[in-house]
Length: 93
Image (cartoon, rainbow, N blue to C red; front, side, top):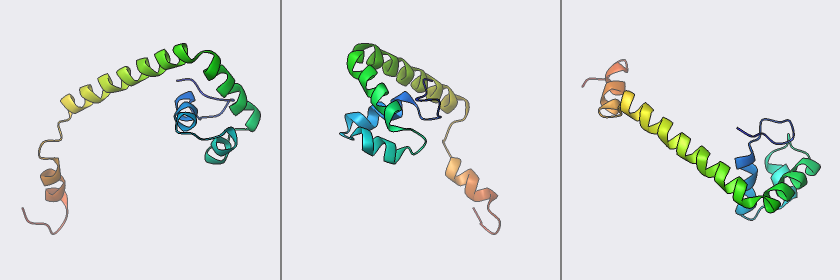
């Protein structure tokens, strides 16, 4: 995962905020660990390399979907609510 400005804020988070219309200043307000220079540098990179950034984000989305599918297969949610309620003290099933 690509992080911005030596923080834990992901490139994806900054791109999503920017694509939703946030200014660099608003992004800094949303992510106080970022400084304005790092956000401007990141946005400049995104604007210059948008196809590469979009490709990276698409690969991340695909990987996350694969992981989600694997987890759902290994740990099916079917009957989960009933199992959780059954574990609750004083709840009859």
